[in-house]
Amino acid sequence: MNVFISCVKSKKNKPSKASELYISSLFKYSLSYALSLTKRDKIFILSAKYGLVKLDDIIQPYELTLNNMNKRQRQEWSYKVYKQLVREGINFDEKAIFLCGKKYREFIIRKFTNAEAPLKNLGLGEQLKFYKERLNEKNK
Image (cartoon, rainbow, N blue to C red; front, side, top):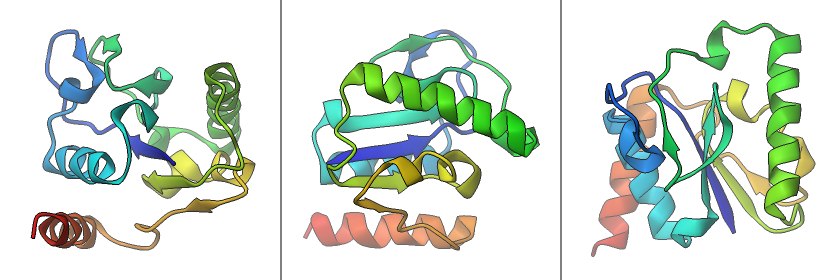
């Protein structure tokens, strides 16, 4: 199973491992939850700037979001990510879980035959609640 989480606005101000660059509560919860589902090397960050990022990749801080891009720009970004997925040897028939907003998953999720978006239609507070509840269940 591959799990995809998205980048967030809050970042450290120096180059860091991708898993440590993003510092918001939402990112930390999504990463913790992803780690409870699958192995570290099956978790990827969808970055507005870099596309597909592995947790241990060292990346520079940046200010870019898909939320400010038009549909065509998001399609181009998604195609870039798709090519990165192919280079990674991702099996598009393997289960994929997208823990990210609609604009980050909208075109990529279609490439997978067995994909879920459990946060679909949840606001920020509801997403945090989702993570807290699932992580508490796993820690019992």
